[in-house]
Image 1 (cartoon, helix red, strand yellow):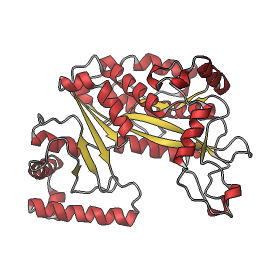
Image 2 (image 1 turned 60 degrees about the vertical axis):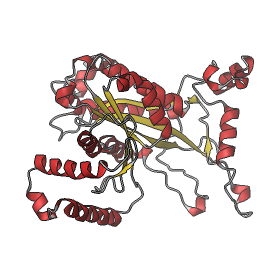
Image 3 (image 1 turned 180 degrees about the vertical axis):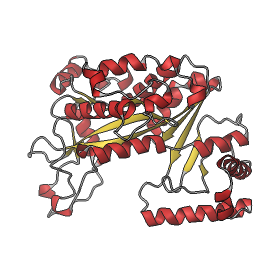
Length: 375
């Protein structure tokens, strides 16, 4: 699969971005593994960072923040030998992965204000620990590397790309820094999206109804009339209503999207690269299209179809610690499964799939079957 993907993804230069779309969505999810030893009952957590092509659903880049080849004792010894701990991290020889001592200090800082009752204190462990094999990659390093890979994939194109990010400040810094030259040439827009992920289904439905009432108030068109309007004209009406509201806002400021959607309720959007040069009509269109649905849909498929990645079940009897009989113990195995699933999603699909993401983006003429890999 790695060899096949490497050959095909070297063909990104041949993708007609103007035809297939120029938007990407980037987000991360936390994947939990079982603790390897009962002596320290604290979760092992790794970050899964993905960028999806918005129109096709193709997962352009995916990284799990774990290096199976690094050895934690060797890293700590090398950092002590080269006096790395005395240097700012940007000037270290070993800056890519967590050292054991620095991760312990990070967890201590994270849990410093946590209040534990006397009854629970003897049974309490720090809520995170490092993997016992391999090394955990620092999240900011992974974010910069991820952004650099995406830039390498599209650097030959002169199209104007839009990159939509989850509201992680480190992720925004990485992408703005990596795409700075494209931004200066007005060949890239970086947009941050935040929304309320904890809403119940009933609350989401109520917000959607509230948003439709808001749209009727702004346009004078009832929801029933709006549903009968062709999609192209309906979107133009929404853009016009949003442009009127944006005309009163300062450039680069967060904007609360008034017409809630069920998948992203209470959405707040900020165009980081807007310095006043973007017309309000284009701002309105960018904000309407600023969504993380493509990458979030992939994350949902992973959690639904790979039992080892399901959300951690925490109970009061376990002192809110996460353990699951389906979870894995070895992060390297989890990395392989995630890599295999990305290949299946992009190139193979399911039996019911008629057009895979690779076909939609123009990298494949048809579905890839097992026989194509092993023959």
